[in-house]
Length: 244
Image 1 (cartoon, rainbow, N blue to C red):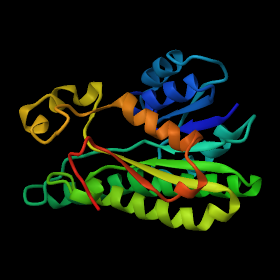
Image 2 (image 1 turned 45 degrees about the horizontal axis):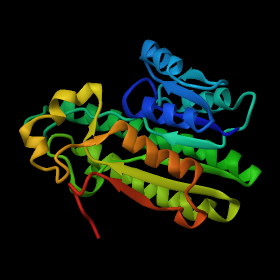
Image 3 (image 1 turned 180 degrees about the vertical axis):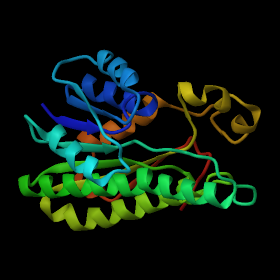
Image 4 (image 1 turned 90 degrees about the horizontal axis):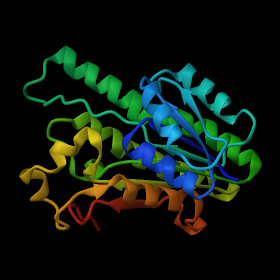
């Protein structure tokens, strides 16, 4: 049985990833930051056994190290899914300087530094065992930018670059690194927004991705993707943003 740590698993994409991993027979450790009730509900929705929840603030470096130790208790982690992230609005021309700097500090801490530090813990442990996978959830924003949340776009671009750097370092040690980059994804939190004419006008499919679709690609990377794909960034945006 594979043991997988999923960050940001109290709802949305993280909960969907956890369900798909459990369906595939994995033991899932669901991380949450503050929504314990959501994490417990996600835990109850999983099939199989051996699942549990863990808490940590990913902007706190000491908490990240504790999170890895706690998640690894009892069994080695076979795959890490860096899914947790935040998206605070901070339009460049209308946001006050204190709010602007706070948005950047918090966004980079949670979206980029947190996954980097947790991946460091995972990469070292997995390299000692000679096997493991690290999958990070990025965004099409890394390639196209975000008008009202530039720190979010920058954090995801940094996550892409970090992941590819790590892939080069760990490939020879049997640790493979992948990135999944969705566009809009239909979750309860953004259900109204993704149904708006403005969003749908940008969707060749006529709809945005579902959380289950993203979860399927993440699970493929965590369990099935070939070693030669390490370092790959997989787009899941319904052709709403194409790059070459």
